Image 1: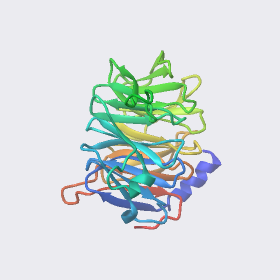
Image 2 (image 1 turned 90 degrees about the vertical axis):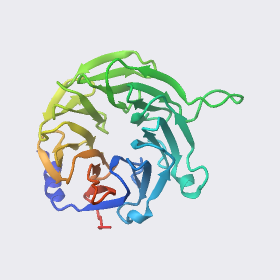
Image 3 (image 1 turned 90 degrees about the horizontal axis):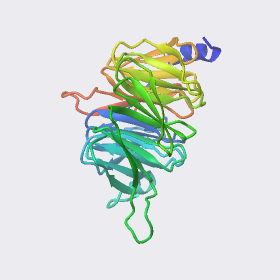
Image 4 (image 1 turned 135 degrees about the vertical axis):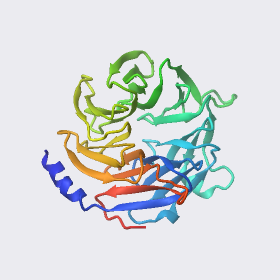
Length: 333
């Protein structure tokens, strides 16, 4: 085990957890802005919320984003601009927001709303900020120019390309170079396409069951995949060879995230735990115990802070909560 991971193992044992309230139903997605100052969440209550300065604020200071008419299933921040984010909903639309104007506006709180062809369940933003990809339940992935297309005399056309897939498509993402597009499939493969040409590079046979999620090492060395076979696998990004697997969880892996320094990988499932392991050794560093299955996790972009949310909204306590765990001066609130 590396010396850093050894130190983290001891430190995380005493790390605090902060609960953020506000949603009325379970939280489905969480994500940090590129500068780490804001944490966004989307919920089955049809809203998104943005929490600012997590370490010094409480839930009452959150900005509520209301415009969707269905579950907000996915949320993604613009990697080039810390004030912009996109939300994808089961109402067959995505919305692009600027939190500065949303905080002030009462009539038009968002930049634009783009109608899509189906109920949206996946969303990602390209590293250069010039493209958004959204996937729906019909396994169609649409590529959106957030600036709009067309000319000065025509209505802006945001969707510039679509892919109708012949297999179930789950999580989608660009690599950090932005020249490859990754799609996880129901056949346990990672379908990799050239971008923007969309020529298929390979179907990487990664797992023996449905592949639900993936994430990239911020250092650009690895990517990780999580599957219904209850395994997380670490892959070399250049050779596409599997380096190791993580088998702490016993149920299908729903969500994974790699820390800013590439040292830690967190994974969540229907197990009532979140596993935090060393990327280099595969050893468990810490286990977060949860009250329900985990829907979404996300490491802070430059701190060992992990946001997570799950199915803990109940009839006796209907609000959906998210939590932030890790090494920082967090205060309960």
